[in-house]
Image (cartoon, rainbow, N blue to C red):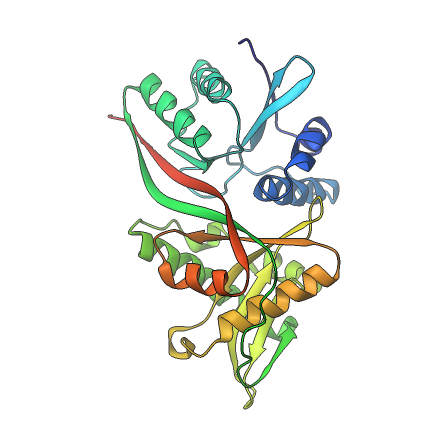
Amino acid sequence: MTYRLSFTEEPAELLSTASEFLAAEPVVSTVMSTFTERLARERAEGKPAPAHPCWWVTVHEGDQVVGVAMRTAPFEPHPMFVLPMPDDAARAIADAIAARDEEVRGVNGALPAAEVLATTLAAHYGGTADIHEHTRLHVLGELVEPPSPPGRLRAATSADAALSLAWFQGFLAEAAEQAGRPHPPLSDFHDEEFIAGKIARQEIWLWEAEDGEVVHLTAHNPPSYGVARIGPVFTPRSHRGRGYASAGVAAVSRRLRDQGADVCLYTDQANPTSNKVYAAIGFEPLVDQGNWVVRVTD
């Protein structure tokens, strides 16, 4: 099979080229579509392209797009994200990257495409590829309302910005610790401007206890192709085990569904607690994914 590859550094161009492909499986494509739409919006608002690698590649078979990958992550080692595609398409991307003399040390995304891309890259570099995290994408089926703990869910306001940022970063740090992997600087992920935008769009929701203390955060991405992705979900250790996560995720999911969106979220397969919580309120596994590290011998 001969594939034609097309690289671009323009998010709007990727959305134009791959819109039909992304819309065909909107839940599976959620990370690609939401992140690319965000970057396209920022470019349209005049924000410059980042200094780190930021590009997309589409794989074409005749007139059809059969695969899409991107390298846009703002943190080291700037891993790629890969959507499902034929194995030979993933190998073609790896071959093209090697021909560009570009070194990619990480690959995330759908299996088996992510594994094929990572191992093919490693072979080009004379290195190895190892998986360091197993993730799973879930989609909400029938919403099962959990018992509601005391308090209420409310939208975050500008007064909650510092706490929201700290909890976004706390989620990332704990996820890295749980997976046993080093974590890049948290500032590479989220900053005050990012949080302010999400608060303005009502994409951060907080559970407020009866005494007014904020005890939990559930956030989500804006819908893309009719799909909204929950995350992050964070409860400080001192408030866990009281049902806040179940109630928060269920309430935000219900709100998104009432607005006409399908709802999905990711879990770490190594975290049985979160997998059990989300299954209990109706989330069903859809696609297994993995994060691969490409190791190169210097």
